[in-house]
Length: 383
Image 1 (cartoon, rainbow, N blue to C red):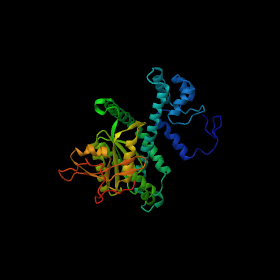
Image 2 (cartoon, helix red, strand yellow):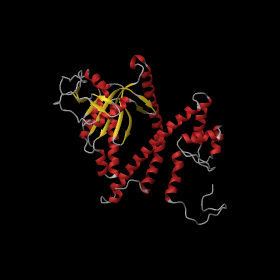
Image 3 (cartoon, rainbow, N blue to C red):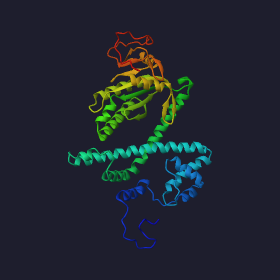
Image 4 (cartoon, one colour):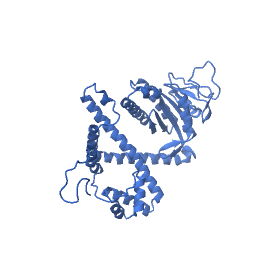
């Protein structure tokens, strides 16, 4: 392919080359892909024995814009991936719609993963560069987008790490796939869970996050959110829970049983309270049937946990009546019934305040549906 500024003959004319950023992109694309860009779109579809239309659907499902040029933009890996998906459909293992949906699931997860890991490397590079500079360089400190030096060094490191990280990606996917299938089989056993998927659902929410956003620089805010996500993930997975998603100042998790969820919520409160960087958190939890879709969870149980989080005080954990009843028979927890309240979009709920047991005696919640006496302290009552 003839580069801009170069005639069709053998002798190039004196013309300015592409800008540094463009040269950097060209330098690292083939390194990161692991193969040269030497195939056109027709080469890929022909090699995979599929039509251009099918190839276009596959490429679009991967999350990339449709390519209408005949430039050499593809590699042998693109051809093999397309052939693999086409083979799954030809062999009758999946229909085309499901195969494309599966491809889309891979693409969305990989896109987020690539962005996340690139940011981690860029932050590490930026921190190292900042430490080597004058401490008074405020302009560098406040920069929210990596400069060309940081971007170039990040690309260089990722090019070196890619081959070493690829086996880890496959390993993690197989491990999580195995755990997911195990949960699905357990949920399908009517003797274990009946006809619905029962889960304990919890939210943890950073308190006064809006005020922090106004006060902190973009870099400090990014570090705070990253720390919150990392600490939350450690606590949740340590008790066998699933981190469903993080949205800035909030995490959503699920567990099969009530006790692990309670331990997670109490540990999250304690961990954030003892952290010098993070503000306090508040947690809300509910137990009941959920709907799982595209890696997320939905349903009234999830909504109830979210609304309980919104009315919990800083450093406290509120649970719904169903979870409270299950926890009441377990040692290690104290439950204080709160007064009945109406939660927006959920309706009437009688929550209980969850604490770690301070003595051998446990508070029963058998009367949780009764209104709370006026002189009993509890969290704020706004819904």
